[in-house]
Length: 332
Image 1: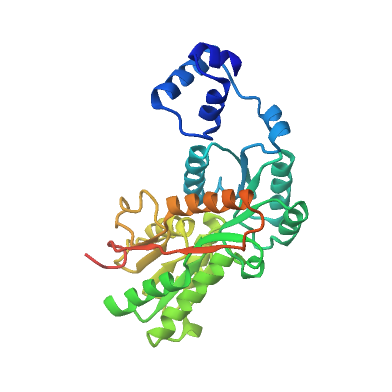
Image 2 (image 1 turned 180 degrees about the vertical axis):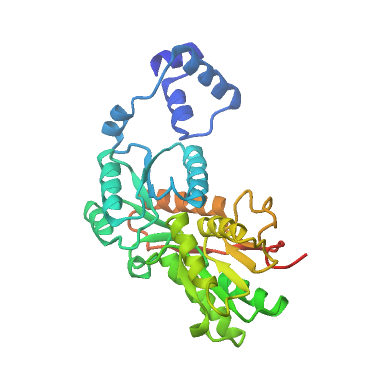
């Protein structure tokens, strides 16, 4: 750092402010420091800094990011926000199992992360107990189990009313009375909320939820195909489907095409989760689009505030998705 300061003709404290983003520096001065860093090959010693300050400036992220494109988008949003705040991000994949989740969190703790963002599995009790014992700042993202909300910060998306809105659209706008649902992985809190929204939408529109088929897909294309078969291979199959997330949607659209069905002809579809190519499908997909960037930025903000003040009351944020009406539901 002294070498960088000498080359840039500034003080070592100015170099520190540029590197750690602890104070606003004149743009010309910052440019000189950046050029000096490049010229000297300087790299901060994170271990030395953590020993001195008690902070690593590393945020840990634990979620099933590799197999789920939606969580991949969330990772990008988190990484951008973390970097802008002068932190680094370490990602561990939980594979959505309690055992791998606990292993992933232990790996993050071994790196002495300042805090953790977690998309919990269906049974995160051991993981939560581990973090509570270590008093590690924690924010739950996307999945917000009510039993943990007394003491834990969380940010997620509204699930119940948006799914009810999708059902109402199918009934009121397009006249469907036989509607089925292919839900994501069983046991996950977002899955439970979306099924609750599906049943609520049916009830509100005078349909009997007990007569509507609900099957779970999402863990693999084969599982999702089997779920679709159980829904369609009956004497009076649904004329419309609500699809519970992007993984389910991609698999179901593929299976429908194998059956010679292109929504909305033969069967209409609406989906929770938007993704970049949803507007490029044939047909273009009607979806509920989650505010991924906002989700990531709020998670980081909550976590940094928790790191700065561990005594804060728990904060809970729920964001509204956006209804993207396209063609798969039957709209022009």
